[in-house]
Length: 188
Image (cartoon, rainbow, N blue to C red; front, side):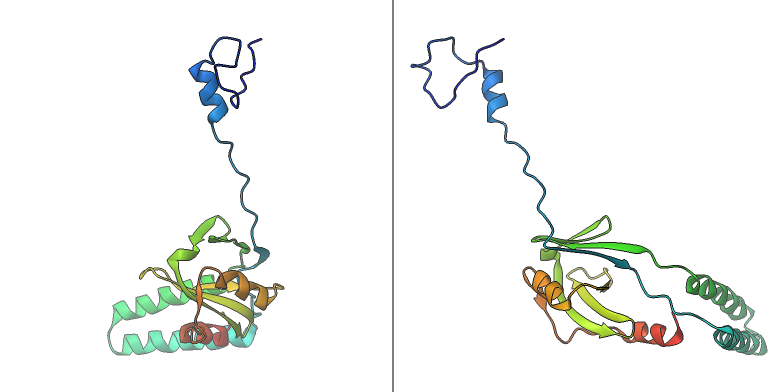
């Protein structure tokens, strides 16, 4: 078994052979640090599904039938086909179930499931009350990235606000966009 080299002592006071370069390099390699614990973490559903009754489906079907009828009256057959296809896609979208979200806010980043956002890349946030509960709305500095909607679930809104304030500025004028409010009103 090779001798253990004490790197704190000078080689002049060490009676044995000088340490090999491999032993010096192995001893000098830094050990990986444990991952930083999240400042705040919670699990919630992507959205709260709204029950749709027979009246909702009847109103939707009547609206789509009226659009298709007008398209065929105007001899715009392509528009009629687009309305039928969009109606089918809307029905499929309205029946999807919410995904489970694991949200973590640490000192430097925000993680949603496996997607990581650096706090320095986020422009502003606001914690607002929506028709389905409390939300953290987050706007990115990127032009093509949509507004992030984080449902807070049972999480304390003030704790989320404090955690995000460490790396992102708060914008009290940031509100839920009108199309999202309209989608809530329509039952999506």
